[in-house]
Length: 371
Image (cartoon, rainbow, N blue to C red; front, side):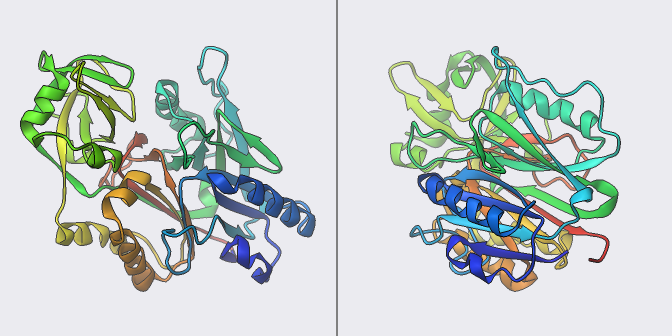
């Protein structure tokens, strides 16, 4: 399978006929992306073009992670056999529920998932999705936006879809597949019980105001650090959860009058949490380099990096991506997301996929046959 990673400015360098293109477009560059896709579809009749809006992009060229709006559109172009994959788009009904088809697919498919929303129904769908696909190999991300109030969207073959998710499904027996989800934090302290919560609002922990409990552990929360996603919380169903593998939720804001906290994902009464503390730089590098033992240089990569990771790491993200490039040299593109889909973080076992914040989800895949 041939592949090339390109930006909108370098599309004329494509030197083979692609069958599928996955693109990510900064949310303020939607019009340019749609125009570029129209040109590509005229140039390559029959090509499938998939995409999602992003907060910022990642490209297989310096500086790798977008810092100064260098590449508003990026593309992964491939000539995967069209009979080896399928595309599905699913939406929500009037009540916000998601309904997968009753019958499972006729053969197992690994899935790359792009969504323009996240919700409790979306997380429940992730629990049900492996039975439909016949596999638990599911990775992806939530489309991004730059400004509050913007509408995240996904794109498929000429149409934009708000409030939908898309599955690019690869026949499992025809593709090599490796995936990894990890974060750069460690859980600290005793597990704390969530004793009052509604949706994404956390009101009470251990029957005390949530903000009082958290600030007793962290000190006074800094508004700038919250805006940079600097205070993640580990979430678990049980007090004795496997905390290092638990999903993370970022804080959006705090309400000092109510002493409450607003998170990026839904939380539930009776669940537990721990405060997350960022690893040292040595610890971050050691965790990042776990990639080099689990991912092959033969794979093409898609990176789903939480916008919170980008905010927390600053220029270190660029250095880490450069480190990946130097060690593996793979073709890759990616985006900064507002939620990442993957198996439990740091787990190499087969597990039901979860919706994460503050994580890096990476998938590498390669077609087993020759073209």
